[in-house]
Amino acid sequence: MLRIVDELAGPGPLRICAHAPADGDAGTGLRVLLMADVLARVVEMRGRAVLIGWTGPHGTTAAAAAGIRPADAEGDPKEIAEALGGAPGVQLTSGTYEGAGSACLQIGEARLPPFEGLDLLAVRLLLLSHPYEEPMSVTAGEVAEAGRALARWRRAIADWAEQPSKPIPADLKSTARTALDNRLDTSAVLRLLHDLATSDDVPQGAKFETMAYMDRVLGLELVREVGRA
Image (cartoon, rainbow, N blue to C red; front, side, top):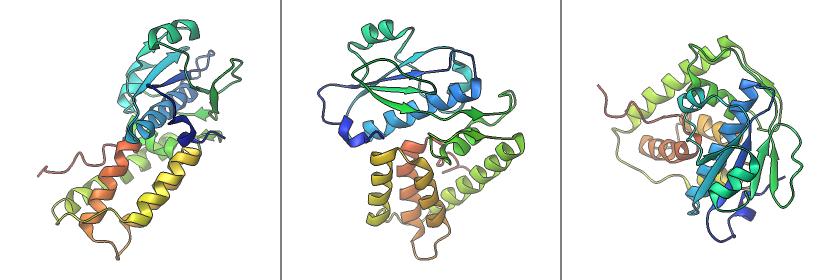
């Protein structure tokens, strides 16, 4: 299992390569690109630059709608290494990676409904709610419910933003960081945030700051309703 902290010690940027399935499995491909995006966000929050390459077929429009940053290079592994200025230090794939000298994250299969008409940020929430290595299947109804859950969170966060700012709870921040550094465990982070949102013991200003901070990794646009009437 990759420990993210082990990849932070090297000089220069961390190079990541995401391999979408060659058979055109759009759901699994989106999940591979998503986890590369999340990994990049975690590493950048620790102060190290990241470069990302994509191989295989992928839906650029769907990726953008799911909040996934564009690739810095696309093509085959050799072309990506040349474009990024060096061999990737981390590979993400849903299949077997046969290269050498890189850490590798094996991403589980994701069966998703057709993307047309879907809220892909809601899809992002569902994908991040499961350990990345486990296969999963998502229905259109589950996407719709996830979209409603996101809307509720965004409305609550907009209300909390009106309250005096308070520090992020130190224990929650430490627990979330450990989950991300050790296993890229976004599902654990989402459980922490759910418990935070429903807690009566945490000031609303602290809830807002925590949600805004963790959304730098989750990429769910949780604060987009702040300041709107």
